[in-house]
Length: 156
Length: 156
DNA sequence: TTTCTAAGGTCAACATAGTTGACTTGAAAG
DNA sequence: CTTTCAAGTCAACTATGTTGACCTTAGAAA
Image (cartoon, rainbow over all chains, first blue to last red; front, side, top):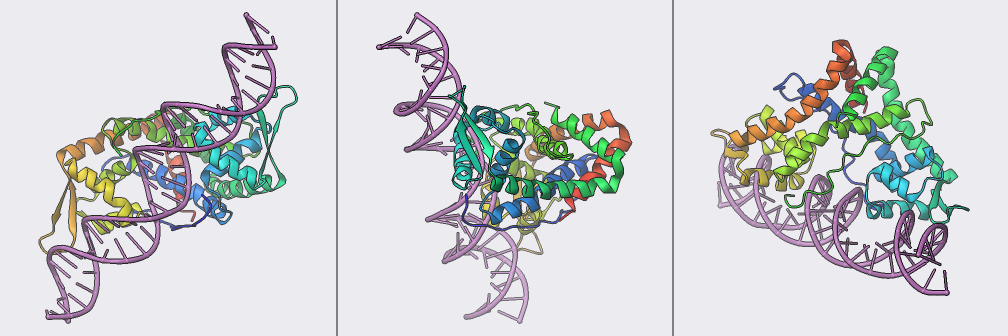
């Protein structure tokens, strides 16, 4: 989880024939996701971190004092899958964990200053990509993008 | 690659506080990608297949007689990583591989009827999701979505 | 007080998807 | 005949996830 920093490929969009009207949209979703996360992932890799660490930092930044159980639910992964990246972040002192005064059962997670810094920088890379794209299409285009993505996200 | 069919979680979008203006967009990209691929992945799982198999089928459907080398380049993965899913598809007779008459070195890949059927169904699930979302926002919204995604995809 | 329950933590085994590196094979080209 | 190159294979590894089983801790209830 923190050793090699492999490939770092840029992977230009391959242009292949379209069989259907919507093929371009399918490919754009794939390359869009990769395009948004690529620079953030490269930054995170320099710290020996990756996507799951970022997801944890992202959520804790927005829900300070979140419990482990809630975090598991929000991230949609198992407790065991959360365990390793979470412990790495605690070891690296990007997160603190304390028991709440009243609800002594749960632990409350917070970001340290280092954690906040890292979360911000990684998320900034992603926001920068989105922001530049939004600038090209104006506020109405951005709103339409949000509407489409919302419909897709809620389609299940 | 073809045994258990785990979790199949639906994972509703978690609504967490927004620290920045564009946080909603970051989250929509994540949930959008998942929303588009979820039903296709569920279908593929019933066949013991998954995303990498679909990616192979998708490309070969659109570039019949593609060589292994080109496929590697288009998919952006290593020859060794391609090997297992590709062989499974050959064993399952979803793909055929033959040597070309003139360029006898390279192998040419094609979909069998079964391969075409599977590729179509899986891609249909994805197109259906996108199509319904596009219907809600109209052609101008769809065009804006494409423009934003194109800008994001090409941002590196 | 003892017992039950819920949250958290840990360990083992496994699946999947990728990586490098080191080969072999088979056909084309010199 | 030898070299070159595409393809194929084997091993070892990393990373991210999954189940299942089990333990610890602490609050709640009997």
